[in-house]
Image (cartoon, rainbow, N blue to C red; front, side, top):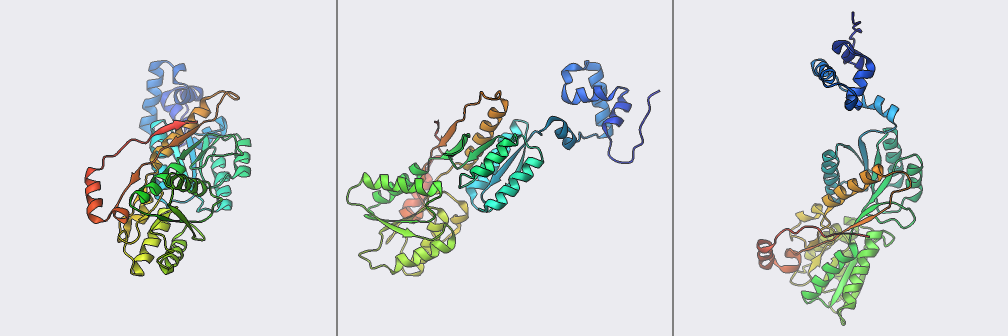
Length: 364
């Protein structure tokens, strides 16, 4: 006679074993190692699971195995569409490969980032994707010492040996600057801030590369103080107040948020965009697309970055200890020219003729 345990809550593995008339070990094998169980017995156990509505306790299984089929993702901010695109791409790829994705946003706060990493460790995720603007070496070293591999997204580490996925930020700014020069600009105002951030100083390198290829085009550095709307508003007001002989005749914002704020201030001062001053952004942030003048920018392919990061992490988890070779995947960019540099008629024509292109991937 099979003893049926009391049912005071959700069905447990004990109830499944009793209903199917098998041992607890057999139920465990059906859930975790079905190849060890005869087909008829496995079918009986699965029927009991369906009848009872049993759901495996993932936390308990994690305590035994040391990890779950979940991946953690900590992003710098979900207010920038680059990072929300990363989340979407990572989530789709993780689901396709049998993993769940746990998401946290640090809002550019390193203390909050450390708290999120510690929490994800406590949930026993298999590994963590870190979309940060800094190296975060101490935090990453601690996480990895605890047995959780980390893949950087949107940052290429120089002090930590780890896989990473980055957009080619130098190429992005090079494309935007070249576009402004091709529009006839001779004085490029580069509105930026926080040069210690890797995307910022790499985009500056792209600006300088474009200028080096076009003798006679000058650079006008405009320090925004920070990469937020307030910084862009201040920078735009200062540009508008410059004497016409010194004022940039083309502006590149290191972020779209900065560029959009500059557009607003220039127009408020009576300057026309793009007739008087063409303006481009550089990170394709959809948050900045709602202004009066659609903004030219450069694609970042956030979804592809997120998906590629998941692939790198799962590859690392599958490799034997000591055999994994860290890789960096670099994703190319394309210019998307809109009204802020082309004018309304030309932008409409360009949009009609535009065709989506696949991101260009390369590894180093």
